[in-house]
Amino acid sequence: MRGFKPVRSNHSHDGPLIELRQLVKKYEGLAGAVVALKRIDLQVSRGAFLVVTGKSGSGKTTLVNMISGLDRSTSGEIWVAGTPVHELGAEGAAGWRGQTVGVVFQSFELLPTLTVLQNVTLPMDFTHRHSTRGRRERAMHLLEQMDIAEHAHKLPSAVSGGQQQRVAIARAMANDPPILLADEPTGSLDSVTAGAVLRVFEDLVRQGKTVVLVTHDKDIARRTTRAVTLSDGEILAERE
Image (cartoon, rainbow, N blue to C red; front, side, top):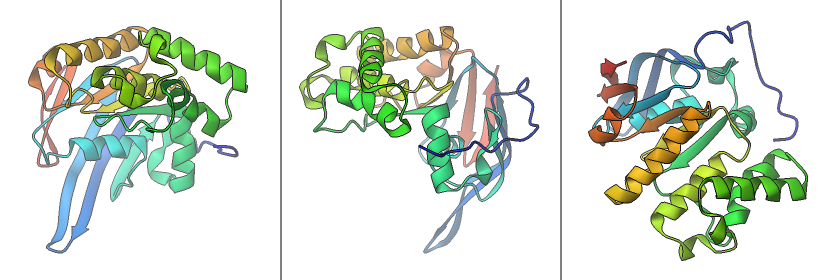
C-alpha cells in the first residue's frame, strides 16, 4: 500500500522472526466471551517450517490471523520481522502484510473472473511493486516455479484444485515476503495432491522462507522439524 511506513522498535532482528508474548484473543458472543487464545507464548526462527495442529475450535486459525494482522489481539504482543503488529491499525496492517506476509487459504480465494496470471500479479498491483511488465515477468516466473505456467491464461475454474492451490501459493509469493502463512492448505485436496503441495512448501523453506502451516493432519506434522499442538486456545504440546 502506498504511503505505508513500518512501525519498528529496537526489537532485535537477530532474534525470532515471529514472537508472540502472552497473546490473548477473546470474542464476544450472545452467550458471553469466548477465549480463543489463552496467553500464548511462541517463537519462530527465520527459515523454520512450523506446523500448528489441533482439533476444530482449538485456536489454530485465530493464531494465524493474529500473526498476519488479519485480526486484532485482545492483549499481549505480536512481533513479526521487527514490527509490533499488535500496534498497527487496519490500514497499517494491510500495508505491512502486503510486504511481509503471504497468506494461503484452504479455499484458494482466487478471483474467478481473473486469469491465473492476473491473480498472481494482483498483490504487486496493490503494492505498486515493479513496472507492469516486471509484474507480469515475476508472475510468470512464480508460475513456472509452481509448475503451472502453461495454465497462465486460463481462469481458475479451468484448472484442478491442486493447481489452484499452486496458483494461490504463487500469489502469496508475489511480493517476495519472508513469511508464508498457510491455513489448512491441503484440507480440500486428495492425499496425492496434498503431498505435492506440501513439497512446494518444503522447497520454499529450503530457499530460506519461513512457513507456518495450520493443519488437522498429524501426518503432515510428522514431516516437519517442529510442530505445536493447540487445545482450547492453549499450547498443549510442542515438538522441536
